[in-house]
Length: 418
Image 1 (cartoon, rainbow, N blue to C red):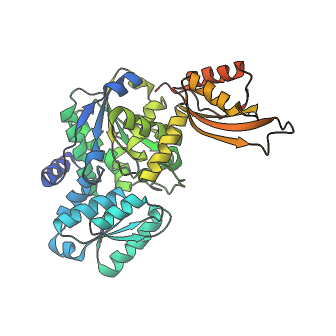
Image 2: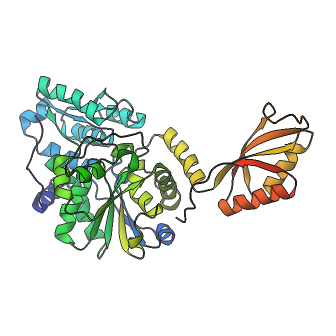
Image 3: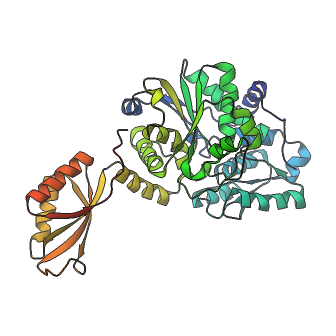
């Protein structure tokens, strides 16, 4: 069976969910960020949903849905298809409530999410290359074992639970102007929209989705949820090929706009949150900040806004790569090739000039094979840490003034002021 509590979601249902999950799910902080506010030219608060026990807002809907099951359904157990966060939430609260949980995850689901689900006692099945294919496998459990399928973004109980986030935001940040929220399947923004329209109807509700998984934009264009081709994205938790029908029906008339963000901006947003807020978020969690970094929402300048940082489950190996890429996007790690004399002291001279400029060498590689016919010279490829693009230009000018020819430099992203 599939859990279906109602055709739509009311504010009363969200209030009931808030009472139901109280004590089992954290009320997360919503903190003012002086650093992000200064960078973005707005008054920025961050709703820290990544600080839930399992690292995402998904716990709210999962616990609400599990508590609504009758006793026979609890004994048969629950199954879901999820890229990770919904699976984690069900696994954790299923263990707490003694409800057996089976999760079908796409084969590319982050390893950290797979292992944590197992650590909570869930039966983890890897199936398919996306959520839709994982869902096919989950439906087999429903048909064979009469398990209850809980959709991670479209069941009414899930949306109502997610909507408790909106109640908390309005109570924590009075007189705010806008809430910027990630969109995957649409359950979070739908729940928040219902709650906020009841409590603070003038507040803008803005959705953000990755360019590589723009299923909400596709639904808007078609007038209904449609299957959408998705590509690999840092925002893997938002990579849903079709938004929920219920979520779309609820939210489309309640939200102000939806914008799309690219991978560079998502990577830079992860770095900004790490540096400025001392927080570790996944790509989907960083999407709201990415929209501001990309200057997608210029009308919010000077306004009081809340960024919903929805999840923090990112593989450590992925995080390290994202940090390196984010620093490159930010112009703080640069790579260039240059010609130097292939004699004792040539490399030392280059290193001395780099140090003199205040930059730091991350890596240098000699290339004699393709350096040309002049055997007295050698090509080097240098990866250097600098303060920013202006500092990199100072370094290039210093090297040129000492007779070192810069052959090429890495293509830079458009200058980002945020």
